[in-house]
Length: 171
Image (cartoon, rainbow, N blue to C red):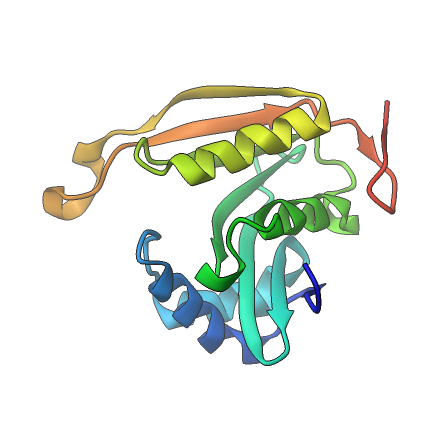
């Protein structure tokens, strides 16, 4: 992953993030406003990957108020020119190393059954962290408007051991 910079997003990134998510063709595209909100108010739990002037990747997440030991990954996107090079996992590792995640013991996300690359990414993260990955039902198809959205399964990774800066993990 040469020339990739991982950092917190800023509002100027919102437009490029929106385009990145749109161009993946597989993620739910939210309004441009929602990406601006993420960049402004949730930047401590979001990560962008840039390569020069290109938005190479993005992860958005938040700490659910009712589960302070959990980080919920809302979306993760990697530009097609950077797929298969470990960028998705690097984005997640950067997120977990953040001060905002120091008390996180579990990572959750939802994934549709047909999104096998994301399933592999999160199962691989669990394996690398030396912890479990439980999968359960979350949102059924009939909850989504339009009748074209697949169901979403909840992936719960953890418990996650305390992280040390530099990528090390210890009990």
